[in-house]
Length: 608
Image (cartoon, rainbow, N blue to C red; front, side, top):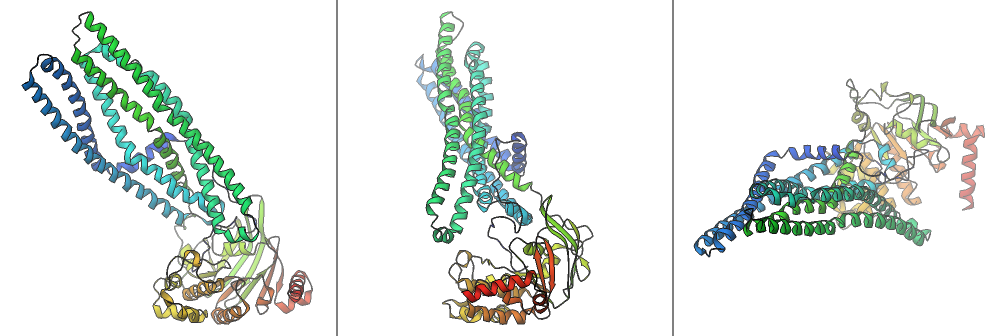
C-alpha cells in the first residue's frame, strides 16, 4: 500500500476511542520482569561466564589481600622483619595489578553484553511497532511510544552496563569476606554482622517506596514527551489561535507532576547512602570495642586481626551499601523494562489464517454485505452497510464529519476488523486472504500526506521499491509533479526535511499522488486528495487523477462535492448508515440529504 498515515491522530476516525497515556502504579511483576531480562542476558552466557570468573578473581583476590595486611602487621611489622614485609608488599602489588586487569576485562565484557541486550530490545520493540494494529497507535500518543523506545530502554541500558556486574561482585564479596571473617574470629564476625538486619530492613523500606515513585516518574515523563511532540507538530495551529500561554500552562502542569515524582523518587533513593554510612560507622565502633575486649581478656586476639576486621567490616558492608545506592538505577531499569515488555506483549494484528491465500491479480469487484462495526463495544459506528462497486467504477462517500466515511475505508484495508457481515473483492473474502495480498492491491492518497526524510526520488519509490528511475519520473509526470521537481536545485535527489516541510502543501500532495501512481493498484482510495492545494494545482492533479482512475475501482471520500459530480455512484453516509445512493443528477432530483449538502456548500462558495 503506497500511503499510510503516520502522524498521530487525535483519535481513531469517527467515533473511535480518544488517545491516552498508559499510566500505571508501581511495577506489578517485578520478579517476572527480572527473570525475563535474565533470559535476554542468558543468550550471552559465554561472555557472562568469563565475566563471572574475572569478578570472582578480583573479589576473592581483594579479600585475600586484606588478610595479608593482618599477617604483615602481626608477623613482620611488629617484629621489624622488613625482608618479609617486602615479600608481602610484592604479593599485594601482584594481586592488585592482576585484579585491575580482570576488572577492566569484565567491565568491557559486561558493557558489550549490556549494549547487545539493549540493541536487541530496541530491535524487538521497533519490529513490534510494525506488527501492532492501527487501533493501538490510535490509543497511544507518539511521545509515549518514543519514551518506551528511548528513555525506558536507556534506563535498562544503564542498569545492565553497571549494575549487573556490581551485583555479582557484591555477592561474591559478601560471601568471600564472611568466610574469611569466620576463619579469623567468630566473635568479631558476629559483631560485624549484627547491624546487617538493620541495613536490610532500611533498604527494603526505602526501595519499596522508591520503586513506586520511579515508575510514576517514567509514566509522567512519557506524558510530558507526548505533549511536547504534539505541540511541536501542531505549532502552526498553536500560533494561529494564540494559544502559546495556554500550552505553557499545560506544560507547566505536566512538568510539575514530573518534578514532584522525580523529587520523591530521588529523595527516597538518595536517603540510602547517609543511612548506610551511619550504620557502617556504628559497625566500626562495635568491632573495635569487641576486639579490644577480646585482647584484654587474652583470647588470642591480635592487632593484625582487629585491623583485618576493620577493613573486612567495610568490605562486607560496602556491597550492601552499593546495592542500596544502585536502587535508583535498578528501580528505573525494572520500571523501564516492564513498560517495554508491556509493548512487546501487546496483541499484534490477527495473524492470517492458516489457509489464507494470495488474491493474485484482481479486477476490483468490491462488495460490502451487512457490514457492522464499532470501535468500542456497544457503540456502533457502521450499521448494516451494503455496497457494490463494479470494476472501473468510482464510488464517492459524502456526509457530515463523523458519519463513518473513513471507517469504511479502514475496513476495506483491514486496519480494523468488522463485527459482522462480509467484505469481498472479486469474490475473495478479505478475511480469508493474506493481508499483504489485500493491501498490495490497494493504494491510498490521504488528505494529510506524509513524506519521509529522504530524497524525492526515494519517497516516490516507496510506492514500489523495485521501480526504476524512469518509472519514477513517469509517475511524477502523471501526477504533474515532474516540472516543479525538475526546477529544484537537486531535482529528484532533493532531500526533504521532516514531513517534507521544505515543500508546499500542494507539492507534497503531488509527490504523494505520484507514489500512489507508481504502486499501480487495482483499487484506489482517495481521501479528498486535492483539498489542500490551490485551484490551478487542483486542475493539474484532477487531470492526472482522471487518467489514473481509468480501469480501476475508485473510492473517494469527498469534502468538496463539486469534485465528485462525475462519480458513478455517490453514497451518502450519516450516523453509520448509507441513507442515499445514486449519481449526482439522481440525488439532486430527490432533493434529499445530498441535495441539501450540495446546495448549502454551493451557496457558501458563492458567498465567498
